[in-house]
Amino acid sequence: MDTVLFGADYHDSFDPRQYLLMKEKYFDSDKNFHKNLHNSCEKGLVSDDSRVLELGGGPCIHRLISLTRKASEIISSEYTEACRREIRKWVENDPSAYDWSQHFQCVAELQGNRESWRDLEEELRGKMHDVIPCDVLKENPIAPKQYAPFDVIIVASCLEMACADRASYERSVRALNSMLGNGGVVVHWGRIGGCYYSVGDKKFFAMTVDEDFVQSAYKKAGFEVVEKVIVTDDVDDNKNVADASSFMYLLAKKIN
Image (cartoon, rainbow, N blue to C red; front, side):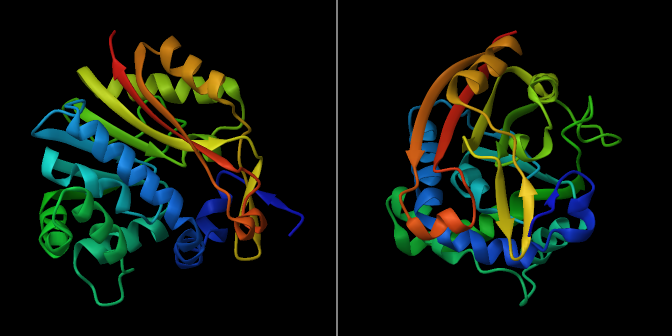
């Protein structure tokens, strides 16, 4: 596992199912993401009837759950066809789709009724209008698709995996701004520190970032950082999967 994979290597070397199984070790961190996004919604930081884009979401749908009842329309975008296929399986209720039920139960409980999780699941399926390709390194990451400006963009565990250096990271954050309407928000979830993560026997590059740099990138791109929470992963087993021990939840509002 000495070779570190990056960029186009994802098309042939990234196994979505192995990744999803690996992510189960991070459920406590994911619960923190759900809690923070739920709290942001409760504070009114996310508008009702929002048009939502998840950018570079991998084979995952769970980060969208807390926005289900705030959203009027959701677009999911991802770099590799294999990951997009996993998302479509879930949207189409394919029996072989990954089971996200524990995430729906977690969010439904935060919303006050754990037993409503199946209703939440069906509501999210109904609001996911498209699953499209993306490349966060492009000036328009979802070209050639054309959409009206979004109200919310989720970018989670993505920029530090796709960007090779600080300049490309800052360009990608500027691209987020260009896809948002006035007052729109980015929900950012990303690693702090570390330089790799593993999926099965494959090791993938991760750009090393710290809190100050990430916040600075958003501010330079015309955002105000509205919320920031650091989540520490204390599970020793996870250190065999990735070398970052902290995650940052950040909500940034477009101001210009």
